[in-house]
Image 1: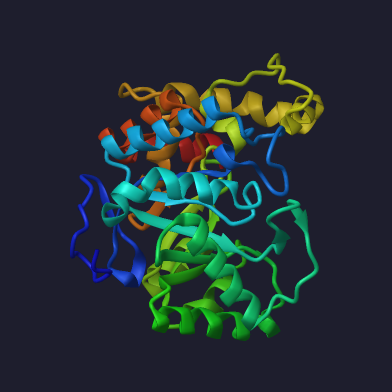
Image 2: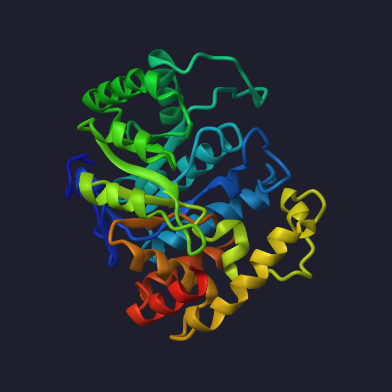
Length: 331
């Protein structure tokens, strides 16, 4: 596939331009942390095990999302210490010419032992991390390469950015960005010609007006992490919900503040589902109404979840009247 904009790419029905790059992506991306394992865990917690049946389910879910118009997939090298990238690479290899892959770097680890290692976060590390991700993803280029350390020392960020610019020139990556909620750091990266996106928190309960304004000003894509607030904005949890003790989210349901937030989100249900959407689809519709640059990347595990998420694009953004009602309730 040619890496030039618009060459062999399929333009999704509900599309977004990936910032300055001009790359066309679906308005919904899918995050793959939950199919690979979070952090240094390959099993348990919110991650997946290495069992063949679960791997097959993950790959089928990715293929089903492709069928429904999703062409943008987000991962990170640290998810399962490479496992998420390997699964994604296997699933997308036959469709590589028609998909856009984003991955992240910044947390060094040993792939064999799945343990953290002490490595200076500097120029050479960025080049090595990129080479390793390319190998695991079974591709010769990464569409969007994101720096994963949200609060990295700004005084040292120039060296990281220079490595990324050099990777763009070498053809190893098409564009880059920073996964950060800090507008100052995002603005710093935005000065680089190869920067095209900022990944940041955005959902109904966590608006980000300053970051969205920066993305407008600098012509950057807004990639939205935790769009469903780790399950809070799905309408599926109540104060009586009980998760397995091995699920690290189980502690949340013993926290009074969390239970208060959970209760408050229930009042949103009628607004979000009024036009036939599910609660999840309404929460995504809020993000699309919030900004034409916004690309939420909810996580998924199953085919059913991939289908519900992808079909949110059939509804598009919430209506202005819905947005006003939510604004009054939440803020």
